[in-house]
Amino acid sequence: MKFSRHRVSLLVAAAAAILMSSTAFAAADADAAKALAKSNDCFKCHAIDKTKKGPSYKKIAAKYKGKEAEGFEKMHKNITTGPKVKLEDGSEEDHKIIDTKDQAEIKNLMQWILSQ
Image (cartoon, rainbow, N blue to C red; front, side, top):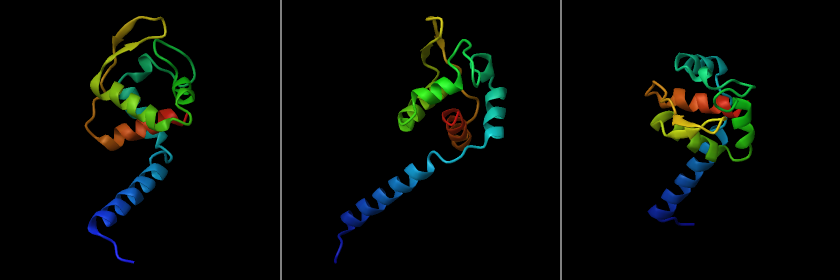
């Protein structure tokens, strides 16, 4: 069976996507995620299991259960660009931007939130 370069490229891309999807939601480092959240005052508005100004992490995880890719996209936008978000009381304010450029730390935080 002879494959063209284009076909090989597509196969490699598909294999990478499968590997990424199976590891994208691997276990998070909870201690590192909590430390990042604490150092960025995330717990001022969020708690793990109760509603504060923002939804609890359990509520966020439940919202995106089975839709983790959508959850990652939404959280990434919120914590890296600081858009206006609607708070639990219906008011709006700018979401705080996480103070790190380390994408692995951001990914770990999002994995941890979605694992609640």
